[in-house]
Structures are given as C-alpha cells and as structure tokens.
Amino acid sequence: MTDSIKIGNFITRRRKEAGLTQQQLADKLNISFQAVSKWETGDRRVLNKIGAFASLYDIQFPMMKEPVLVLKAEEPGSKQKLAMEYGYTESICHDMINHLVNDIIVMGAKPLAVLDTIVCGNAEKDTIKSLVKGISDACRENDCALVGGET
Image (tube, rainbow, N blue to C red; front, side, top):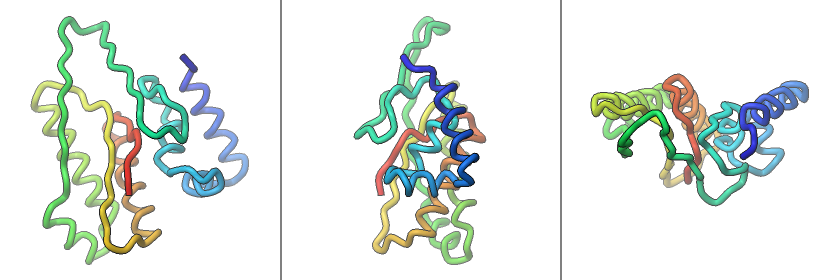
C-alpha cells in the first residue's frame, strides 16, 4: 500500500509551488476537484488512485471486536432553494454534512467517508465549484473523507 500522507504532502507542496488552487490543478489534470482534495487530505483508508471509476476504502478496524458499518444519506431539502437563492451555496453544504455526521454520531459510530451527488438542470461552473468546496471543507472539518461523487 502506498503512503497516502507522503503523496498528499507532495501534491500539496507541488501545487502551492505552482501557485495553483485545488480546482486549478484538477482542471489542468482533467480530473475532479474531489480527487485532488481527497489526496491532499491524506486519508490512509482511501486506497484508490486519482481518476479511478470508484472509491476503495479500507474497512479493517483492528481496534474493534465487532465493527458495524453505518450508512447514511442526506440532502438539504427545501432549505436548498432558499440557500441558492440568497447565495449561501457553501453553507448549505456544511449544514447537510453536519446533519449527516450528527446522525451517524448519535448511532455511536464515527463518520468515515462521503460520496457527493450534484443533480442540476443547468450545470453552472461557479455553483458546482462552490458546492464541491462546501462539501469537501465540511468533510475535512468533520474528519471524514470526500471520496468521490457524480454531477
């Protein structure tokens, strides 16, 4: 297995030396923002490389006798329309991830990873970038990995 922390630090260092944001690097490499963000966070449990068609996540928990996987999906609901209308795109993402994380925690579990799905009639680049940034920032704040998604 590769040392994801070293890889993440290398990517971050080279990206910053080039004066690029994560989104600019993703655009240059023709990959998703999530892929760059995922590798820069250095989550050791994420096993796949950038550009994979699915995410591989190590589910071995040697510190637990009988681990149970807790799965949760969330969407912002009616708040999304108001948030988008008034320019709170990123904050609605934080609200959604925090809600998801809270529901997992009250089950006695630790949030590990999130997959995002953005469904829209008209893909506006700035809005999509803001949504992905909000989701990835909220995941980082909650110590879980954004391992991929779809638009």
